[in-house]
Length: 220
Ligand SMILES: CCCCC/C=C\C/C=C\C/C=C\C/C=C/CCCC(=O)SCCNC(=O)CCNC(=O)[C@H](O)C(C)(C)COP(=O)(O)OP(=O)(O)OC[C@H]1O[C@@H](n2cnc3c(N)ncnc32)[C@H](O)[C@@H]1OP(=O)(O)O
Image (cartoon, rainbow, N blue to C red; front, side, top):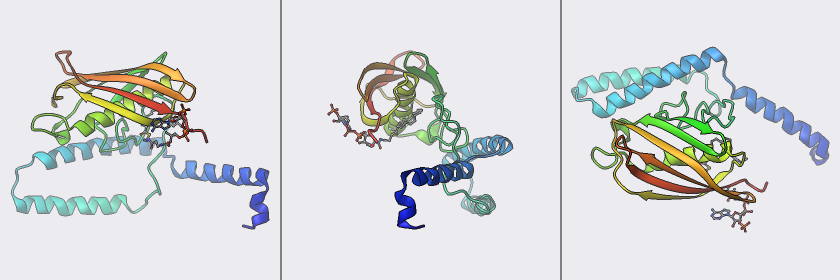
């Protein structure tokens, strides 16, 4: 492509439009693929849980390992350049989000519900896969979930942004294997900045982690 061609802003915009459509098409899955992948992701989550809890002998582990390698080869026969894109519409249900994505096996997944007026809530149960200190959830996992919840609340307020700061206060250990709840609420907005507060609660209602984040809508 010539320098002169790309120097024309109209032509450059057209090239970007075509390019954006190509990226979007490459990252968009058919409905039946989405359904099949959601099922597969669930089975891979169960596999991950089995891997961290198994006590079968080493030769059995090696046999399973070989089968998994073969399955990975089958899926890799046709690969995209990046994960699929769902409608990132503020529902917090981006298809491949590592927190809430139904197609991402590393996502618990956490089902996040945006609340009108700048809020979000979630209920979820984490397994031993997410263990940090013995019998409790890893603090980084709590932080990841809260970051997403806070971000959905900012978006539900009509003021989405990139996480610029994330402050965490770990009040009590967060247990796993029980139903946890979390809520977020926008505290204030100043120009491109949005501050949001959130917390995770154990089944007894006591807060285990509190968080405050500041989101910035990028200038560019
Ligand atoms: C289109 C953007 C929105 C994208 C959101 C995506 C989807 C929205 C839709 C649905 C949402 C659903 C779910 C959302 C879930 C996601 C949550 C997870 C989000 C992430 O996982 S996200 C990854 C981690 N995140 C980063 O990777 C950020 C890296 N960073 C940057 O991309 C830039 O750094 C940026 C954009 C932050 C600022 O860049 P910029 O050039 O626009 O800002 P600029 O410098 O002009 O600052 C303007 C004013 O903010 C102050 N300010 C800026 N940064 C600050 C900081 N860190 N601490 C304290 N104050 C800060 C300045 O001091 C100034 O303040 P003042 O005006 O008072 O002087």
